[in-house]
Amino acid sequence: MSKRVVVAVDGPAGSGKSSVATRLAERLGVEHLDTGGMYRGFAVRCLRDGVNLEDEQEVAALVDGTDLEVSSGRVLLDGSDITGELRRSDVSAASSVIAQYPTVREYMVTLQRNMVKAAPSGAVVEGRDIGTVVLPEADVKIYLTASEPTRARRRAEQAGLSVRDGQKEVAMRDARDSARKHSPLKPAGDAVIVDTSNLNLEQTVDKVLQIVTGGVRD
Image 1: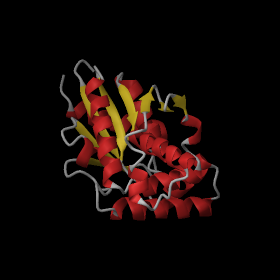
Image 2: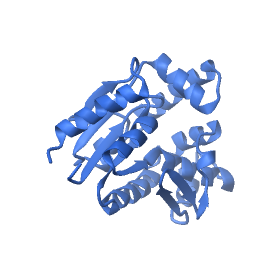
Image 3: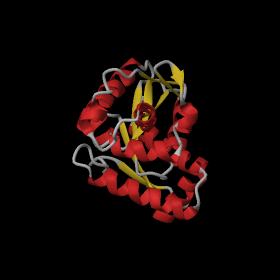
Image 4: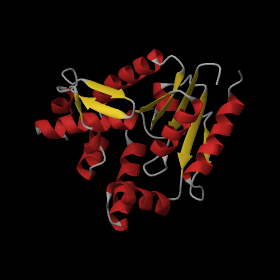
């Protein structure tokens, strides 16, 4: 596109956010920012340091001393590439817990906004509160969803889990993400909802791209 564009992509676990956002950013020629990867990166730090994840003060104490960087699809923690660790089940579970804490979310939101501001051509930003909290002024807001069985199967394939464990993880993430007091998961009022249950990756990307190009005029 000839103008700078910022696209917010939100949705629950297993809805296809990461794959769709990655391909969409490639086709638009803009940066891709996986905010969930940032929370998982901080979760890795918490697990390494052995903090009590249920103690908000212990978790919050690590925030200022943590250096997180997202670049070209990689997540660096204190200068080390930890991308390969982000999809572990224990990291996903930990990130869901720490993401409830206001101190952690405020830290992440500041980082995320600064990264988007620094992106010269714009960005596709994925997460669970992008359109509602992080970037309420995004040019286009997409909310991806899918049936629970579809999301459980995708999550199981992604993390190497059984379908039953995938179902448990998706249900747990849904409950935590939607019920948390600070920045709960929900579609922005002006988001376009896209159900990916019966769409493959390319079909979903094509559909979202049509929405984006239709919503942003050169």
